[in-house]
Image (tube, rainbow, N blue to C red; front, side, top):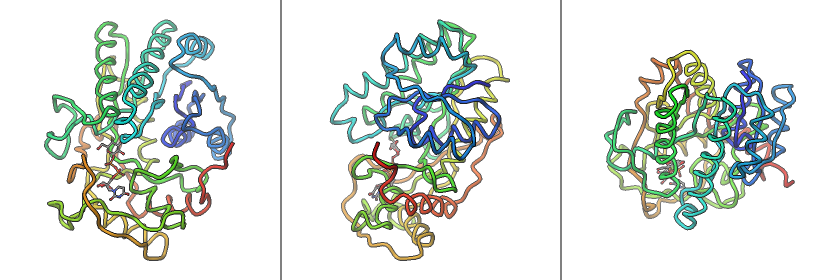
Amino acid sequence: MRVLVTGGAGYIGTHTAVSLISAGHEVEIADNLVNGKAEAVRRVEEITDTSIPLHVVELTDQEATDDLVAQGSYDGVVHFAGLKAVGESWREPLAYYENNIGCTTSLLGALARHDVKMFVFSSSATVYGANAPVPYQEDYEPLEAASPYGQTKVMIERILRDVAQADPTWRIALLRYFNPVGAHPSGRIGEDPKGIPNNLLPFIAQVAVGRREKLSIFGGDYPTADGTCERDYLHVDDLAEGHVAALDAIARRDPGVGAWNLGGGRGTSVLQMLRAFERAAGRELPHEIVERRPGDLPAFWADTTRATEQLGWTAKRTIDDTCRDTWAWQSQNPQGYPEE
Ligand code: UFG
């Protein structure tokens, strides 16, 4: 298939581009390069030994988006483009609503006009909110999310269901990611957060490479085995392969909308993650237990039955694989991608 990957210069987008190309798809990337990097796309070209058109475009610009889709002859779209920092979304909610929802409706309009009706959306486990029973199952309702970022995911899922209800020829996958971590084993592409990392693995990796003094563990008194929070960490290459499986599945299934959890189906604590990273880096890493971070849930992970049965996909890589690959990326690129 000819696939347009929006947000394809970002962390999950680049890894998904590699998996799509490895599976025989043709890929083009659209990105506004606010978080994504052109250098990351160049490295995907190097890993896959292909040439990938990079369209630098604001998807909120309806005319530019229409032009992009009009020239592309795409069969399907994997839509990652959007702002993604939970904390920032509390400070700048309008930016999140305008950008994430605006770029999705603009894109959907262009796709409808040019009859491209296969769409994979980058959703999040955050749509289950604070009250869903663990493990999270796809048919849980009502969807709600604490942060403005999470609310944009809930709203876009709703928009996509409405679009498919109005035009039943759409084939749409809502992929609810758990905690994406890791990097391509080559160490050439990986997660390169702006400023101080909010997420656990990038923070630990920056401690290991000497950019941060020590890890603060947010809370040691949760009702979990070792007192620290548990999450369902998922290697980004497993996640990327989940997108390829979802695209194949919606192409062969009846049209309509499906939601699938992409997770490993098990919880790992912050301390277990730290220990695994210490094994990968070959040394102990400074850390201290501090106050809980507001809004954190004690423990959640995915029920992955539906993805296994309907997509034929399961996560294969271990936490040790994940930490080894993150360390390969961080140690080879201590400051992330070079400035452009
Ligand atoms: N943590 C620390 N220290 C840090 C960073 C994180 O102890 O410096 C802990 C957190 O308290 C949490 C765990 O590590 O227990 C994981 O935290 P992350 O920030 O890596 O991930 P979250 O589970 O908080 O975030 C994820 C996704 C978001 C999503 C959010 C909703 O990354 O996209 O879940 O809860 F919105």
